[in-house]
Image (cartoon, rainbow over all chains, first blue to last red; front, side, top):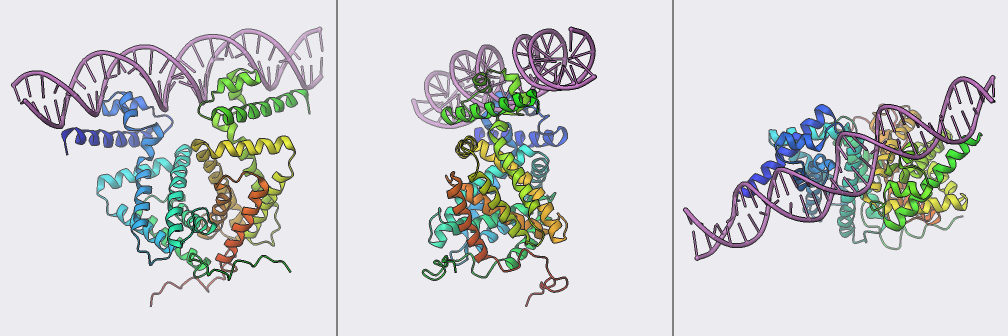
Length: 213
Length: 213
DNA sequence: CAATTTATGTCAGTCGATGACAGATGACAA
DNA sequence: TTGTCATCTGTCATCGACTGACATAAATTG
C-alpha cells in the first residue's frame, strides 16, 4: 500500500477520533466542523472530502457494523433457519467487537456514548439500520424461497431488528454486557415464538383460514 | 376561541400545506424555507416561530399521529393483553385516518409520499417513533405490573413497532390499503407468537430453564 | 381609549455544506 | 534525478438552515 493511502487512512482515523472526543466533551451540537478540522490540522473543506456530513463522521463506525452484520448473515449456512441465521450473525458481530484491539474498542465505546446521548445521531442510526433491513429482507426472502415484498421475510427481519434494537436501547455500551443482554432477549423471543415460525409455510395448508363463521 | 388563535391555526395549516406542496413538486432538499414562507406571505423568521426546523413542518402530522396512537393505547381497557391493546390502538388510529375530511386526508397522503421519498424524513420519522416507543413501553410495563427497564414490555412493544413499521414500509399510502396490510401482518404475527406470550409470566414457573442437557 | 400582551418583520450573524480554482504532494516513467 | 501526471489539499465565495436582538404592529383586556 502506497504512502498516499496510508496517509489518507491516518487522516480519516484521526478525524473520527478527534470528532468523537470533542462530541463527548462538548456535545455533538456544540462541536463545529471547524474545531474537528483544527484538531487534526486540516482545513474544514478537507473534512468534507472525508465525510459527507458532520453526522457521517459520528456514524461511520455504525455503518461499518451494519455492513459487517450483513456479511456475517450471508456467510451463515443455508441449513440454518432465517431467524437463527440472523441471531448467529449478530453473535458473530458481538464477538468481533469483543475481540477488537484497544484503539478500536475505545472508538466503539465513545461512539456508543455519543450516539445514545444525541437524538439526531439516534435518528441517523435508525436510518442506517432501516437501510440495512432492506438488504437483510432480501437475503431472508432468498432463503425462504419468497419475494422481498412478501410479508413473512419482512416479519422475520422486523422481529430480529426489534430484538437487536432493544439490546442497544439502554446505556448498554460494554460489548460483554451487550452480549449478555442479547442472549436474554433471544431466550425471551424463543419462549414467545412458535416453533417453525420463521420457516416456509406448507403450501395449501395455512393460507385460506379467512372465512368467518 | 379568539381571533388571534384562529389566525395562528390558519397560518400553521397554510405553512404545512404550502410546504407539502413544494416538497412534492420540487423535492424536499430543493425547497427552501424562504420559498415556503413566501408562499404563505410571512417572513422566513416567522416560519421558525411555528416550526423548529424544515424537517419539523414535514413531520408535524406524523408527530400528531404518534401522540394519537399513545392516547388510544391509554384508552384501551385494562382487560386487554398488552399486544392486543397496542393493535387495537393502531386500528383506532387507522379508522380515524379513514374517517378524516378531505383536507386532512389529502394532507396525510401528501405527507406520506414526501416522507417515503426522502431519506432524511424517513430518519426523522424513525426518531419520532422511537421516542413514542419509550412512552408505549412505560404504559405496557404498567399493564404488565413490570418496570420499563424489564425485557418483556420492551419486547412486546418492539414486536408491535416492527409490525407497524412493516405496514408503512412500501408505497402503501392509502389508509384503506394500509389497514388491509396491517390485518395481514397481525394475522401473521398471531400465527407466529405463542398464546399468552404478551402476558405476565407465572412467578417461579418458567424462569429457571437455563440448565443445559 | 389606554395599557398590556403577543405575533410579526427586519437585521445581523453562526454554522453546515458545496463548487471553483490554484497550489502542493505523492506516484511513476524515462 | 527529473519531469509529467494524477490526486490531495487549502483558499475563497456562496448558499441555506437556523437564532438572537430589537422594533413594530396587532389583538386582548380593563
